Amino acid sequence: MWGLISNELYKIIKKKKFWVTLIVFAAILFLFGFFQYSNQKKYRSPEKRIEMTKTQIETNKKSLQSGGISANERKKVKQTIVQEEQSLKKLKKDEEDKNVEWTRRVEKDLRANKEELIKAKTKGKNEDIDNATTAVSKDQYYLDNNVDPYSETGKDVFSAFLNTKAFIEIIIVFMIIAVATSDIVSSEYSPATIKMLLAKPVSRFKILLSKFIAIFIANSFLIIIPQLLLFIALGTMDGFPNMLSPVTAGTKYQYDKAVIATNNQIGVSPIVGSTQIVSYAKYLLYVTGIDLLFIATCVSICFLISVLIKNSGIAIGSSVGIGLAMSILGIMMLQGSLPAVLEKVSPYLPMTYASSDMLVYGYLAKTIDNPSITMDMGVGVLVFYTIVCFVISSIVFMKRDMLA
Image (tube, rainbow, N blue to C red; front, side):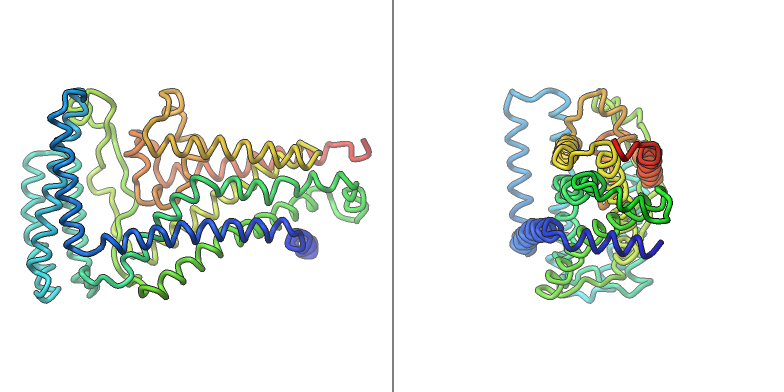
């Protein structure tokens, strides 16, 4: 079996198309990654962040004075102003305490956050309770693991890397995989090298499986390795983040009548206690696992198209077209502008889970206002599409008349 896989891998990597696709993807990734990094570095200083937050507050207050916004939008803007004012207060406090030893600052923050948690529980608003609970857990994590949260080393690297991943995965990853994958079977028909393959004393299923495994390995290399190199490049420039630093993951949501009543529309709030505190290292492992699953799903869809369509050009065009449609869908999802019909079925679409970071963090469910979108759901949907597409490919390939 390995002989078949290695032979297929050799055929893939000797094609100029594979290396051109790799270079194009890496170039886009690095350009956007360095743009994200420089932009975040520019506004990282406390003074800049305080200035930006003040500007945002003023802008939102001016928008309240205009007569062109609805009652619901007015409520949302007011909520945003409250959050920004809280953020401004914290930024000013951090700037005042910057010369205080970090453990004392964290202990002080921990006491303040515990008080906020008591207040939040009294008011009974789920989002406030979850935010306060998370803040308390993070502060305790810093103390227990001897992690300085005020260290600036690598902070821009980690956030710029994740922001870049989210953008690239939603916009172009499917299309990159489509270009690399869609002729893996169809190219064997012209010239008819498929007949030579079938002449070997190996079952059709093994031939097809070896192609699938080989193209999955090739695409994993194509997508993951440039991301790893970007992380190393950014870390070399600015220092690597402490991989023990905490980050939230796995937040689950529920429909909340209080949020619905406030906004007069569908609304969700976090399930208190669902948020996990994990290290950067574990978070990246989760993200990479989802990445590999999404790559497998994209490969299986494009692989099916390659089996169904004998003409390589049409197969690649069809896959790229589907990828473009999925990218548009992903952008609409981020903007919260999905049509009502698509919102209902979004938990069952593979493109919903394109951004591994947003899925692991728990941001997707809140953005789309659909609590069904969770890590478990994402894994289930991606595995389902991968298996179903490969099974259909196998049935078609094994029953097809190759002499026709």
